[in-house]
Amino acid sequence: MQKRAIVLLSGGLDSITVLALAKQQGYRCYALSFDYGRRHNAELIAAAQIASDYRVEEYKIIKLGLGSIGAQP
Image (tube, rainbow, N blue to C red; front, top):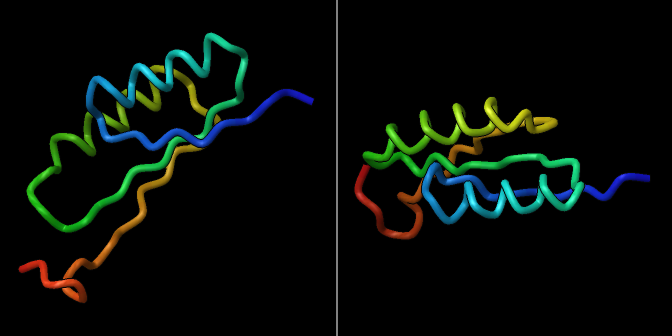
């Protein structure tokens, strides 16, 4: 059975490096991003493109409402 990894993908350099290393080491990769309702749409767009480019098994964005911990919408 092939090893699997879940990579937290922000769209930045650190997370793409982790994804690239996991793929290089033979992992089947699944990517996960968080939409916390702030101004980071460009990062989510970049993360989706990276997930596509690296052909991850599945890519999901989870919406988080941070209003419950004091964030302003």
